[in-house]
Image 1 (tube, rainbow, N blue to C red):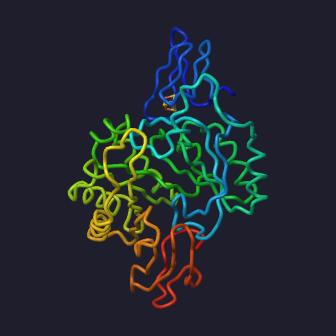
Image 2 (cartoon, protein in one colour):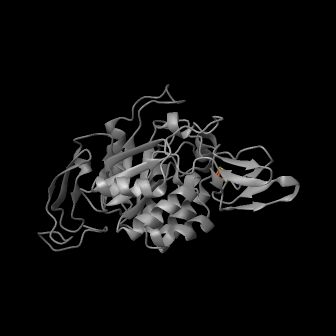
Image 3 (cartoon, rainbow, N blue to C red):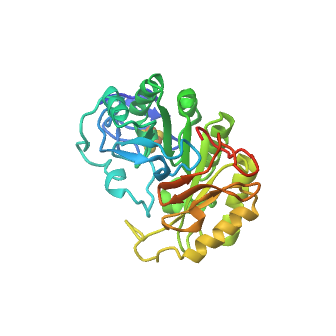
Length: 336
Ligand code: SF4
């Protein structure tokens, strides 16, 4: 446990956290919405600093990032807690653990994480599984050490962080996969306990800061799968973030609080893929359907196969110094 870095002291021993767009005003003895930042006698503490609940070596494709150091391993780290309350959360056992009196996890200092990542020959650290914003002090200390050792830093995030937080990590953050869960504010309010607009602002700011960004949308039958909504979402990516921004459309499986809806039909994912292309996106991928033709990367200019994938594995890399071997058009991305 350490004193938080992003908060303001208020009257009557209250504090205002400024890490994410909930801007929680926290009374003495209480925690913020994420459940892992606690006001003790007028001082805000991070309860999860140095206490990962999960560490794992993953292919970078699992984040998913398909255009960033393809084929490399990423050391993944998460603590308990999340600032969202997604009713369809796929990691609810660790993301919604923030109400526990004692934080679960093992003790691991930032330098131990970096040593483990180097030992496993990873090229990056991914702050993932839960939400890096809520363990930001820990993530930032790891990111600084990682950068010094030549490792890249990756956030897998819901994009709800404040501008202040993003500015403080910017020089050390190299890539992000951001969930754009819907293009409806109502969906964000009722399904996630958040709002849409701050997520859109984060995405635009990340692009301005030249962080490599890929987007993921979990398509949930009847909740966010209308053609009209998906087209508006895809147009936002193409027009406001750029047509080179990859869009991962992922298959929903019933889980946590949504067990009464079916698995997303493959046909719905194919329609979403068509919508992404219609909006002008160069790279659209399906997720959670291993073996689907839409998990491969083709040259957006001539259609030549550049990266052949099965699930999270690269079967063949045809790139020549990051370019298409047939028409020499560069593939968008970093570290290709
Ligand atoms: S990080 Fe947690 S305490 Fe801080 S504003 Fe967000 S939900 Fe509230």
